[in-house]
Length: 340
Ligand code: NCD
Image (cartoon, rainbow, N blue to C red):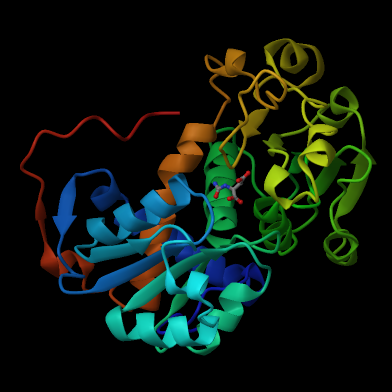
């Protein structure tokens, strides 16, 4: 697809060559993310980073990605602090903000809201998460991480075995990831969720229609057996009708080191979009896994910056110009390129 000037709203926009292109650009931009070189290619450009739902890593990594390409960032972090709280329509907000910026990232609690917003924007809009619907940049960074973790074990995405664990009903990261993985060949999916929090039927059907093998589990120990990747998710409590309802599901599945040792193949990669809920009643991914070298959660977050740089570079069409505006880093830099 042609990326220049495009909105990035859903992973359904991508085919395999588009994903390869994004990953190639990400690889090319890695030296800038790793503070080996500086580029000022986006000097003068402004990102409007609009987060109308809580966010730490998505918001900061989009902002860092834009800064690392030389651009400036303006942000709003709450509906309360924006004119949406005064009854302004998404249409009007989009027209206004697109007059102030060159690209917009938006997160919003309602499914479909970012697409509606994009219709009125004169600059590209990137979906930073629209309710339970989609989270395209997260899925891209997850897939980029999966690819690199599997490569380190001489395996490929085609033919891999992945267990998706937890709240598969409301987890937008997992929804987008499934739609991306559907584009690959012969993936085996273990869908491990408590009854009531299953993956939406249309996404399961999409996987099956593409010929992937899908199995359903409501017990963690059986679901994690003989997998290459475990992708654990948080109970999305903010999407439940009530707190009591959400609490019914919390803490049902707890992946910890002893579960891992007993039931997983050695070298099974552990992933999570984060944040993980570390409160005593939840702990879907226990802190005792921190020494496990297959815990890839912080390699995932590091990759978030690189993937988001690639998305900006593609929609703003500066891939070829990046190196022309660059020079080596002169300040002290911490070691970032952590080996696996
Ligand atoms: C995810 C999200 O917001 O959908 N977080 C993130 O962006 N890394 C997952 C979550 O909140 O559980």
